[in-house]
Structure formats: structure tokens, C-alpha cells
Image (cartoon, rainbow over all chains, first blue to last red; front, top):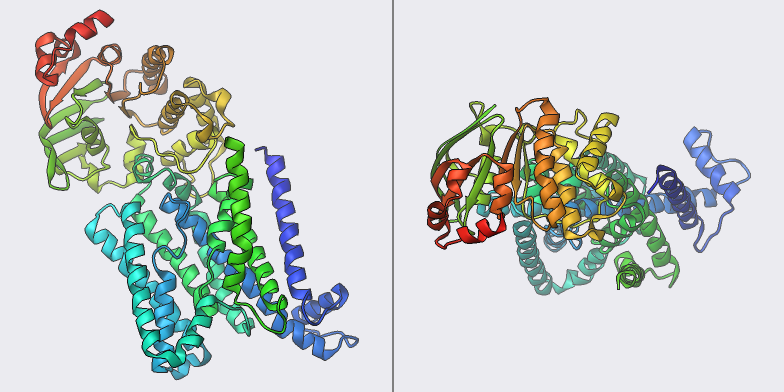
Length: 344
Length: 252
């Protein structure tokens, strides 16, 4: 792949992503012209306020509802995809994802406990559910890593995947038990587990954005190590990478990215699997490109799925987790089979 | 540079693979590690390269190899493992360039022009330059083996540890491998400073590439000395429990 063609692909991807984001903001029960949208954004960013000829109602719909929602979807999609790409390299497993170590099941258990016991901490106000989800998600991963390193001093990939699966299933079992015993809350819990961007505002973005930037930058700094790690632990060590340390640090960063995302939106699957796979097909496996492009593709895909989730059966909303799988699975299958057919 | 091993023992789980190994390897030596399947050759290479844990002492210039940073060890010892797992289709060039990680001043992002230049040289030396834009999953076994050799060279380490580098190579490349290894060690430091420690299944190839032999049997060293003395009928019978000498002699 020449530098020129890579540059062109990156530019096209960026344009496509921007295009999808703009559509995701504009489309819905209320449409807005591009001029008015730019007026609203410009007004808020420069602090001059919305231009007089724009209906304040429009301003409120777009600035306080649609835009943060689209931005949130983009950030969550991006964060999940980047951690998916990273986990696949670390564990040398194309089916690994940021959920492999039980972040989502841990987060779901945390949410279930908060809902059922009706716990609230005044300082956290409306953030109790995401906070509990995040803490439990991260705790599950830390337990998984501790278990893996106690039975296997090299923390080999197979051990990590197996421990992750065992722990996920166990925690899921606990959560199912809890929700069955407390049937009143089970509907609320099921909805949380299917994921939604409904009613997510700038205050949520304000927390997610710095976490995404910090996590992304840390992983980018490790991109060369991730390339080496994707040859397996033995070769990585032979080439000078401390496989165990790299694995633990990167898994914690991925879990942080996933944990914060899941905490705000509920469990959304598939994007973390599909986006990095598609990106590798287009840009090759080098993480210097795979990480940023996974963010862009995953983010755009999630914004698109959220658009579908809120418009397809409008005014009813479909859980976005269902949409990512319904759109993503056939698309992923197509990409996978198309590339397989070439080899036969 | 000197590699010292004293009373070293290594286990996989509860099985002792290497038992009470002591040896010394100095700069410029060409050492063949021989022995039957399962005698501990690969384990020995990996322990010496600090990749798997051990009891006893393994010292590089007096420092404990397991206490050193991985990157520092990889800058001194380039190990080419026998298993070459490939999960993602990097190009040949990208793969060889990754070999410069241990010696590169830039551990984070890509690599600098010097690394790139060096990777090109290693690809040319191993005859894979023409394949540079091919993906690893499109290569034959022998081509892949040469790419991995180029990546090992790219580590710029004075100690080269090769685990069956002749695997999958046809007769031409096997013959060439010895020349490459000899040329390479001379070219890098301009002297005889570079060191080769290699496992070969082909004893004739071992004789051509190495001068010293360390023969293992059931995890213990049964011979350490001149390779010509190791490749005698009695010694081979002792190491392999089978008369393989006529097979080698016929071949040579």
C-alpha cells in the first residue's frame, strides 16, 4: 500500500464519517437545514448565542438533544472499537473484544445491584447507575487479571480468554439470579443491558470525552508494541517487548474505555468486533492506522445505528445494541465471506 | 560479551526439562545445540534468551538475564523461535521493520529512516526484498522462514540464537543460510565478535555453520566441545540412541 493511497483512504474515511455525523444530527422527526445547524453550532461555540432568525425551539432540540446524543454515540462507538482492536492484538484472537474479560457482565451486575437495592449516593446524583456499572466492570477485569496471573505467571492469551469467559458467565449468572428474584426491576435492567443513547447530554460527553482522548493517546503510544504483541507472546518477548506488562497495562486502558462507555449507555455489542476487522481489511494490520481508523469507523457506525434506533419505529425507540447487531451482523458476514471467497 | 550459565534448571509445570546446566558462551563463538527431539534444545535457547523462567544462574556480562529489561536483553540477544505464529497479515517489510524495535530510539510510533534502511538491508541479505509488499499469509513456509530470519537480523543483536533456521528451506537456501550467517557476523562488527547459537536438525548444516557443539540428552549436557568430535559415531549413538552416523556420512 503506497503512502499516497493510504492518505486518500484516510481522507475519504474522514469525509464519510463527518457526512454520517451530520446526517445523524439532522435526520429525525424534526429536520434542520445545514445553514441553521451551522448557525446553532457557531453561536454556541463562539458564545454569541443562536442567530435571531432561528427558532429557539430548534436550537434547544439540536443543541441540547440531538448533538450531544450523536457525539456520545460517536465517542462510545469509537472507544469500544479501539479497545476491541487492541484486545484482538493483545490476545491474538480476532474474536476477542473489550467484553472478553467481563467488563460488560460486571457492569450489568453493578447496575442490577443499584436498581434492586435502590442505592443512591447524594454526591453522584444522576450518575449512580453509570458509576456502579463502571466500578463493577473494572473490578471484574482486575479480578480476571489477578486470577490469570496467579495461575499462569506469563499471563498467556489462552489463560486470559478462558478466565474472562468463566468470570463473565459466573457474573452473568449472579445477575440473572438477582433479576429473577426481583422481577419488578427486570424490565428496567433488560433495557439498560440493551443499550441506549436516549437522554444523554453534554454532561455525559464531558466525562466520556477526556477519558476517550486519554485512553486513545495511551494506546497510540503503544501502537508499535501492539504490532509486536500481535505476533504472539513468545515472539513479542524475543523482540524485546515485556508481554505480561504490556498486556496488563493495555487491558486496563481498554477496560477503562469500555467501562466508561458501557456505564453511560448500557451494553452495546458487535461494533468492537466488526469495526477493527473492516479497518484491517482496508488499511492493513498496523496499529498506527488501525487504532485511529477504528475510532472513526466505529464512531460513525454507532452514530448511524443510533439514528436508525430512534427513527425506524419512531416515536418508539429500538435499543441501539439490537440495531448494531441487526445491521452489523449481515454486513460483517458479507465482508468476511467476500474476502474468503477470494481465497478459494 | 559473555554468557554464563551455572547450575541452571528449567521446568514446564512440574516436569524438569533442563537439569543442572552449566556452560559459557563467549563473543565470536559458533555453537551448535544438538540432541534428540525433546532433549531440551529449544528450552535451553529460550532460557538463555531470558524468555522462560529458570532456577540457577544465567548471566549476560555478569547481569542476571531475568532481572534485565526485555528490551535490553533483545538488544543483546536476537532469538528466532521455531514456532512462527502469524495472526494478522502484516507485509514482509512491516514485519522486518518491527525487528528494529529493540534497537530503535523511538519505541512509540513507527521507526526512523535509519531503521527503515537497516530493515531493507536485512531483507536483501535474506533474499526477501522482492517480497517486501507481500502479506505474510501469502508466503510459502520457506519464504516465511527467511522473513523471520531477516527480522531477527534486524534486531542488530551481537548474539544470534536460531531455533532450527533451516526449517522449510530448500537445498539452495539451506546452503545459502550458512554463508549468510558467516557473512552476517563479519559484516556487522567488522570482526568475529558476533556469536551464533543454533539448533539444527540437519547435522551436516550444523557442521558447516558451527565450530562448537553442545549435545543434550534428557535435559543434561553430555558433550561440550569441538563439533567434529561431537559428530562421531559413538557420540551420536549416545545422544540419539540410534546409529545415525551412516546417514550423515552418506549425505556428506
